[in-house]
Amino acid sequence: MKMTINFTDAKEFGAFLPAGKHTVKIKAIKAESTKNGYPQVHITFADKEDREFTHYQSADFEQGWVRNWFYNFCKNAGLQVEKTNFTFDTNDLIGKPLFVDIKREYNEYSDKYRNELKYTAKYEKEKADNWNEEYPISPEEQAHKAKESNNNAQSTNPFAQPAATDNPFAQATTDTADSTEDYPF
Image: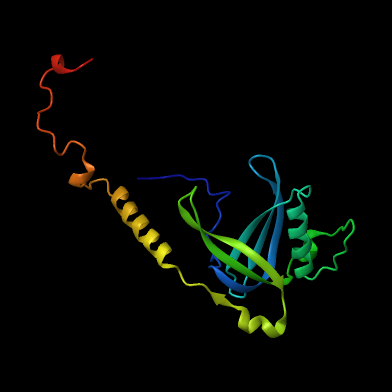
């Protein structure tokens, strides 16, 4: 089978930061709107092994919690933040070191575990060696992954036969209709 695919906008999968505490540098910051039109900032962090994590942060500065988050984020990144109308270029944050804590949480809506930024902390060189720690996968997540991979294995095999318990007609005692006169429509 011959296929033609336009890979112009295709992106390579990268190495991703797992849940845990990491020493990172800010690799990129990009402002966009959400699908619903709300302002958002995408902040990509990378560790020394070039593993990445992208955090999607609301940029609706009318919200107090958003202003508080950006105040602490900029301060932790080493900007001289003032408690006035503060103007800065996001490019000033590129390359700044930070400590981040990434947590893994179950999302009921997507039925998946996702990594989320828990918080950022100011980088301190003397603490950097003790900061890096990857969190182990919880027994709950392991069980969820096993269940998910089992479901995927069954659904990806087009020749798999349903288990007797999955077949609602397994206990049927009558034959199927032999003529169209037996159909109710």
